Length: 123
Image (cartoon, rainbow, N blue to C red; front, side):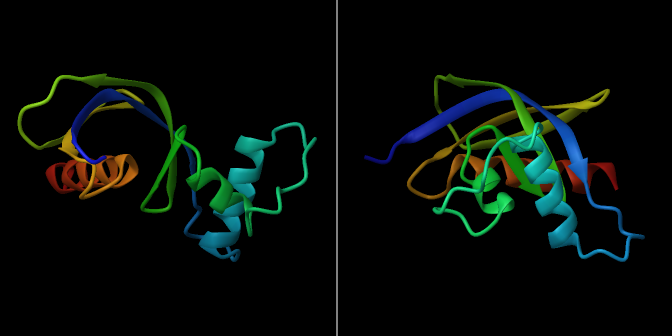
């Protein structure tokens, strides 16, 4: 059942593509995702996923936005009233506050909307 939900939390950048690299952004992000999800190289990619990025996107622990991988450090559901998409950068952590109808978008899409707004404000 869909309903309006609100989450407040913190994100930290854990990987970003090197735009000067000869390697494709997709390949770079896939390698970064593997290092994040399997730092000790102990696992094979599950059959459910085509690559490590697909597996990373399937978790509730990371957000991929504009070729940057963010780790969700903290996420708390709070009371609701109106839609809200906000983010603020504090040192190397991004604090987010999103409120949305979960039948209209996913948690990751809501956080990405807040990150888009943050990018527009910092330009």
